Image (cartoon, rainbow, N blue to C red; front, side):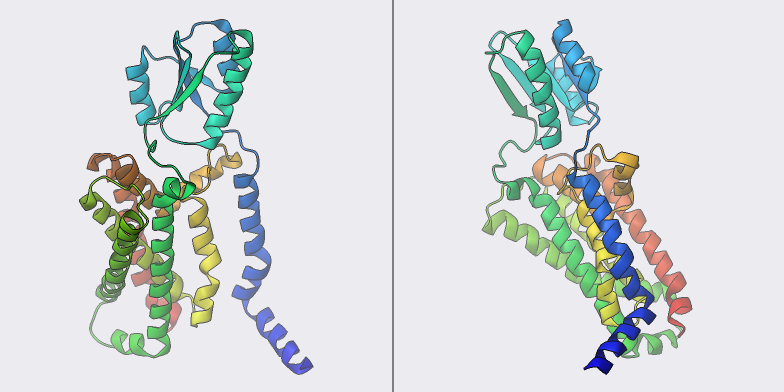
Length: 336
């Protein structure tokens, strides 16, 4: 028993990947979670139709005060992200407009209204309005777009990565590399082959969520298909890239925390506005961020194709980048 324990300890100590997972990765993940789940101060731009000093000073104390002529212009600014909240003071009360449900924004606006209402009319009725997602009741419905993307990405990443490692272990990849087939065509073949299952899986998840779970996902099914296809290609290309550096299926599984957990954190499930040290900018290198954003625009906000063009292009660039790396590093790191 003692000899077995010592052998296991020595084996892990000699494996740099295991040491990384044990000592470094948990600290990095915990640090990111600390910032994500701790108190954050999101940057907000708030507009109002009130010119009263009590109101404008309260807004300027907590956020950037923006100016828009009327509610119509303010709604346009809300839709394209230039404005986070519009506070409309009417004779019947206070109307507060948000683009979508956001606990960080609503909490800050509540503080502003509390301060200003104490000086104005404490009994005024406050009504909140959402431009998008007002028909979503449960937390699952509100986050369904992100959950679909996370589950689809994770499973096809894992399946493609483990399958690619198995190809190497069984010697199939070595035999193919000895043939005249170029590495680029080989990588593209593997990517397209694995992606078929990712596309089927993504469609199954979307249909199950929409039909069986009765989540009101609407918007164009064609646009949704584009998102699923490119997301699957991105997941497979990253899964294959990780698999190149894994000698066994177990080592492939070891890479999951490094790749998947950051993707989940920046998928939209957790609010990232106001993170210190510009950590929110890490979302721009996460394919899940673009996939979830695009699916939300289509299925929840029911936007047009032009609204998701940037997200699709970003995922496609990430896919091509990792596909190129796969072709470049395949022989070098596998030593075949």
